[in-house]
Image (cartoon, rainbow, N blue to C red; front, side, top):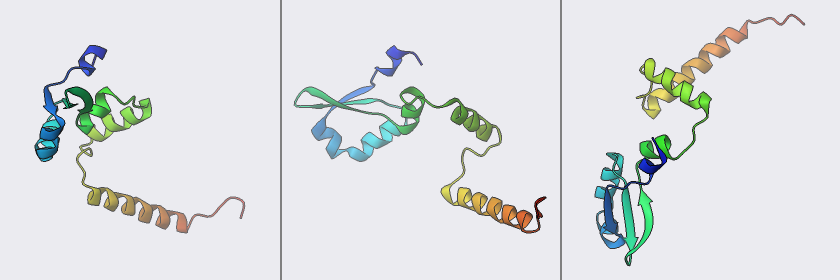
Length: 107
């Protein structure tokens, strides 16, 4: 995305309306909308979804980008937190059992 696209907003809301309909504001941001919040007519904040933030604002290290692409290719980018915890436990269990009988060359 170019720099100019980063600054475009889809909707301008007064702070009072954003507060009164905060759930709707979050839904709009999650759907990719960028919302400019005005307070007493003065631009005060921009609300964007996390995906938009990660892709357009935050500079991602090359390693993280590479890992994300590998996860997408393997279909692992949609795991729930519970599934991630299960994967971690499985790897740790496997690692412990394979290291249990490992004899070091220095022994």
